[in-house]
Image 1 (spheres, one colour):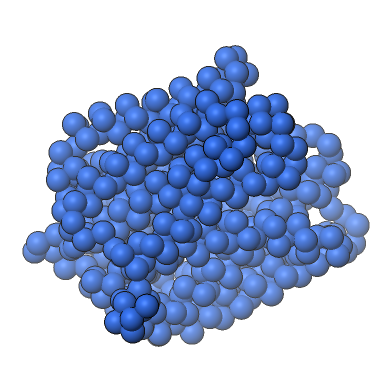
Image 2 (cartoon, rainbow, N blue to C red):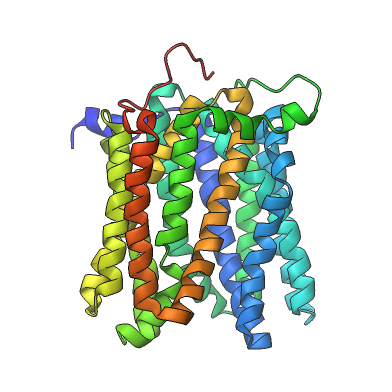
Length: 415
């Protein structure tokens, strides 16, 4: 690999602020995964109730929905770097609280749920601030590279984190919370060490117009609306993660180790594609590639649903992850580049809730349909629905389909 190619592949890392931001986010994501595995294991070991597991995700998601009009405005009004640091310190205290409950033998569902609500509030403020800070740390020409690396770090933490959490838990339930606490604290210190970047903050007084500006911007900017809504409905229909235990046990007859392979496969595809995109960014026909990615995601979902052979199913999931990453890469680049800096927090807050809702409701859709018609039908139906959404959105949002380069729109400044 030539020195020039390597330099281009790591273009975002030339900037010291981005380097600290990147590793801070990675440590925080890794801590979240370790903590989530440990909480889930302890709660189920204590209650033996799957519904108790479902409440873990619900209590972490609801704050994002409840605070959607607040979190984005905060990210646009105040220093995003400081917001990230404070949120990570809150994560540190949440890990410390779970550690204390474990050490004292007081670990029980409702105190844990209360801590998870606080943790959900922390993530509700962290997400729009973190997503809006990256464009302030690198020039516009390096932003797609930064987004690819951001996605890669998240996917890597999603794959490796649960495995590491499970292994660490084997040394005792206090160990993963201690590790999470240390990771959160290190992440907070690292992001607070990021040099203060330029940021166009919201200077006007708070009112209904400023609070809802993110919604109004998304509604008016058809490219951003099309990108966000395409992902919402594609994931809502095409998500098969919730049914993987059914396929591992009843369809493919693989057992627990097979479930681990199935869960890891989309992440492997996503990380591979993210690394490829970091080295080979999309330079032309970006909108078309986004629709192709969604269509491939739907096709791979259908193959996974129809397959009764383990290696075909795993290969289909790898393709699903890679195709989804193409869509995520284009969508996040468009949101970052097309959204004025003073609106990024509010737009990213809406986007975060849409992504969270699509995942939660997608799992509910898949589970409900599977209970009535079977898991295979539910997955294949979702894949067909994703293909239909890709076609309908390509027709309904021609501006998005015709997007060529992932550049700042002409006449718009993002610094």
